[in-house]
Length: 510
Image (cartoon, rainbow, N blue to C red; front, side):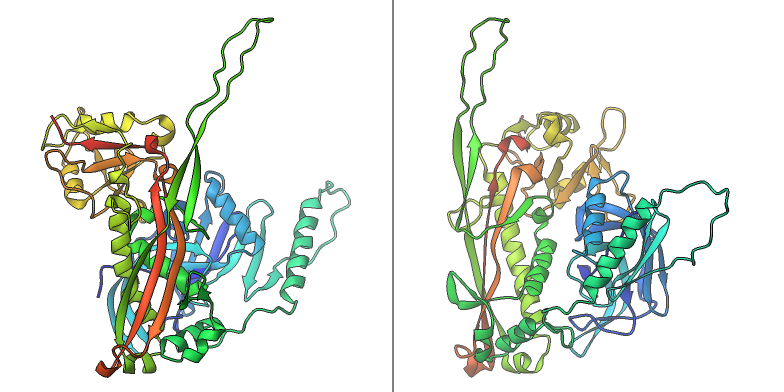
């Protein structure tokens, strides 16, 4: 039993309108060996539809959840009329770029069975449309278009159309423009032809691609498999984890590093990222019809984000490494919590040359005085929020630790309304003054001279660059006399504030 949010991913897609699918099939295990029994699901009647488990990307709502013999059957709709991201997700689904469903849940009761677990009770938190499913059977099965009143069935990449046989129209029937239907039929024909083509995709055996199987064999001590894997270009002694493994590792990191969920996260192939910055604008002036125009030229500077490295090792017993088919999952879980906690601390308070730069250590971010050294003031929070330009304020997020959040939950404005408001929809964050709040354990406590709260637009203002998700070197010799196998792991990431003007801190001072 655990209170850690777990994510089971299987990609599914939808078209304009309704989505129907199986979010979790019964009777079979996922890629890490977990089985969820029928009757295990509990939770609210409606759930948010997220994209890739990002709480900032709510693209729809699931309003029908039913446990059938086949599995957890769900039905929902994309908010394509109101949410731009929902329209983008629809486009990715229609193009075939994504096609799986993923559930996020808290385990309430489970026991270890074989290489995985048998889960008999859980609380469902959200269901996402994702690109890398954990269970091969969690797929969207029906997609309805509200524009064409037509249903597209998608199962195992075979596409069928459920349409009644054409009937002759009455002689006096009005003429109907069939161009839209012709375009859809042409697209269906193209998709069907594409699905029938032979592909060079690698075969999947027992839920594992060949590169994943080779990686597990390497972790079990078979160094011969190293030649079939990709090595790190900056250190050939390390083997890169396969893509699916790296993606799962990043998802695990997000659980322990909440800043990843609100910051701008990108990838890079360089050891340093150079960011051009404009330091002045052109100097236009009002002129008359024939007045002489004057020239001006903006000036630019250059910022730099260096990629840092984090490394550790973990020891597992030789017997576990040799006998467990889930040694990959064991190593992954052992590393992700440690890496996630360390990088979360650096994203907030990183100040040394060896770690990413933390936003709380950026001296270019302005502060608003609280007006009291130890007691939080509601008016100061409002002043801090409105000190930002509307562009950043309207996309801003409050970040603070749990102790500070507990204090704010008791505060009211001048009209007696609580500043803090709970979330009435599962998967949506609670808010302060109408803006989301994220709890980060590494933020400072309320104290004289401290800065316990920061507010700002993290998507525009704080950037994270992933250089190397996860590289592993198996060492079967160093601790072999103790019956252990050692795994050296490293990760490279850089981060820093790119727009100090997008943030504001609260300074505890009179």
